[in-house]
Every structure is written in structure tokens, then in C-alpha cells.
Image (cartoon, rainbow, N blue to C red; front, side, top):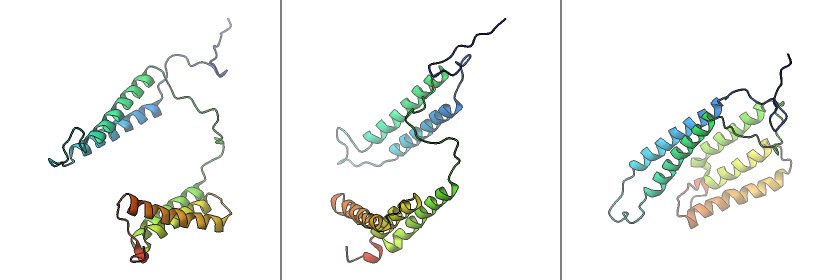
Length: 178
């Protein structure tokens, strides 16, 4: 007696029965944790009478936390009903190629170095170093052009945050100059 195999839309054998993707359920659980943390953090915000209006400072965090929880529940229900995320057809990632551990470690070191340099060198210089180091690690060979862009990004970001947004960032060695 011959057995017949049904195939799905991609030509692969169709799954027999329901399969639950544990990774997607894990993502749902992570969304629950983040949602609860956002709601808890929002509940700890202190407000004054002047801040209480039709929409106080707690409105957005409560909305974000609630939407995170709603998304987690909807994702979990979909996964338990047999739904799963489709892989992107335009993805150009070679899954046969392993992880570039050297590149990953270098990126982490660039990030940590820039983070540790902020109090001393200041945000503009550390930000420029972060951008430039990242371009080098990711394989750019236009070092001078990348350095010019890095300086523009570091100093431009500093000026946007301090002037336009009123956020105080450390100037480091450039204190008094900027």
C-alpha cells in the first residue's frame, strides 16, 4: 500500500498535526516580561498636580506596556493554533555560513570602548569613535571618508541633543569649547 504525502505551498511536506514553535512562544513570553516591566516602571513615575492633565506622563508608558501584553497574548494564541512566522523570501543571509565571531567580538569591544570613553573624551569624540570603529569592523575601506562622517555624526548628535532637545551630554575634553 502506497502512502501519499501532501505538500505545502513551498513544495515541502506539509506538517502532520500541529507543531508549536517554542521560539515564538519564547518571544511571546519575553514580550510579557517587558510589558510587565514597562507597566511597573510606569506605575512608579511620580507626578505633580501641574503634570496631571487630560494626558499625564504615565499615559504613554501605560499604553506601550498594554500593547506589549496584547501583542504577547495574540502571538501566543496564534502560535498555539499552529501559526508561524514565514521566513523572508528576500533575505540574503547564508544560513550555511557560521557566525563571524571575530567581527562580533570586535563590535562589542568598539561599543564598550566608546561607552567607557564618554566620561573622559566626551560624547562627540566617543560617538565619532564608535561610528568609525563600527565601519572599520564591518569592512569599510574608505577610512578617511568614514572618519569625516563619524566626526559629523558625533558632533552633530551632540549638538542636536544639547541644543535642540535640551539634554545635557558630557563634552569631556571639549568642555568649554562646545
